[in-house]
Amino acid sequence: MKSKIEWLDKQLKAWAYLQDNKTKELFYGGAGGGGKSVLGCRWVINECFTAPNLRFLIGRKELKNLKDTTVNTMFEELQRFRIRKDVHYKYRENQGFKFNNGSEILTKDLSYLPSDPMVTELGSLELTGAFVDEATECDERVIDVLKTRIGRKNEHGKIGKLLLVGNPVKNWTYREYYRKYVDGNLDSSKMYISAKKEHNRFLSQDYLDNLNNIKDKQLRQRISDGNWEYDDSEDALINYDSIISMFSNVHVKNSDKHYISADVAGYGSDMFVIYVWAGWKIVDYWAGAKMPDVALQQIDHFKTKYSVPNYRIAYDADGVGNLLQVRLTGAIGVINNHKPFTGNYANLKTELYYLLSEKINNNEIYFSINDFKFKNFLIEDLQQVKRNKADNDGKLYIKPKQDIKKDLGRSPDFSDPMAYRIILGDK
Image 1 (cartoon, rainbow, N blue to C red):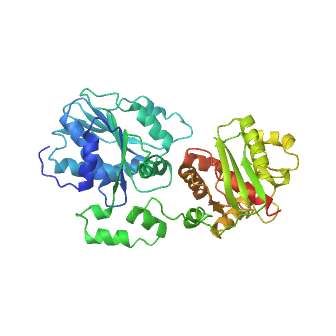
Image 2: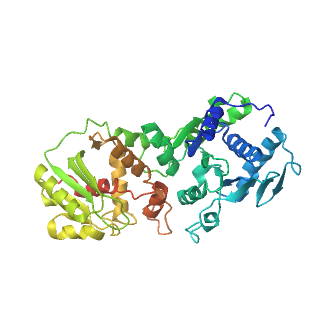
Image 3: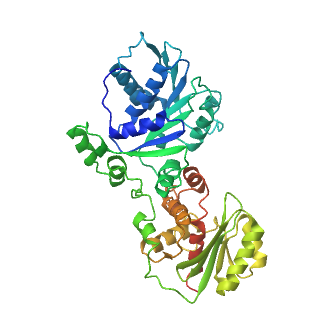
């Protein structure tokens, strides 16, 4: 590859990780203009043109978008490298690029189909590496299957690598790459590199103006600013700044009245979570694996420690939560699908979340415990509290739990017990 190519500093930093013998996964990106697609195309071209009998994959959620964008960038970069079609390689639509040395680059649709939960089309591939463009659009389950196919076809001693590029979205990419990188918890075999328009000295002023003039606030924060902590969409019930302020609302006073709210349901949950409140201030908590007896013992412990009467305890009565009816006579069991007390809500849980959102937005709740990891889980959960499109009955709905689980990769067990606190009021 002797053609003179201009590189961004961020691309060269990423290139070093793509060539080492340690990094297996690299997420590169963060905003428009960061040179994401160019980096990915140059990487797969370099690997396949310089070594025989390798097989790489380039993919995107929809094959049409892949052809309209990434494949066009591939052609531009091949031309820039003076690698000529039908001389050095052949291209077949719906198949990809085949080089004279036997190496190939497959083009793949990476959409998730409920009818094919095992993603069988990818399951039979043997790949040296993969480049996923706009990875934040893809379902995590597809990427998980793709990872299992990488490193299976490599005759040159290099480890298999996955390059993901994309703009900020608060989904699995935020959780698994950006957040862990910021917190210092990213696995040593993974790396995250932020690349924004400010890092690209080759962008035209027109392109920069277009990015800076995006009218939609959230879209501008994501695409122009590369801000992973962008404000939520208009559908969000809870303002992001109010969520963050919840951990510093020292004006929320202690109360002599203590309350317990708990999510000990077994259906669709990952953990049992229990909060102890002094008024509207969370002063203690417990989170543990799905072991009902242990959770019940912890509630008994908190009852004794904080002198909490049963009528100031609320819990999820679905699933194993119904065991508390015997242990906690007089406590309030919340059945999520029951009718709301007031208003035109779809069900009781929807009503509780709407009222919780008002409390948080009005800075009336204080989470006083200093547990960074727990806070991050709770922040993620509360950001998923969104309005959902109402049916013709005009009722208010919230984002379904199954959709939240898909985006989070887990159940929202940290926010649900906060919502159950609402039903206790100030009694």
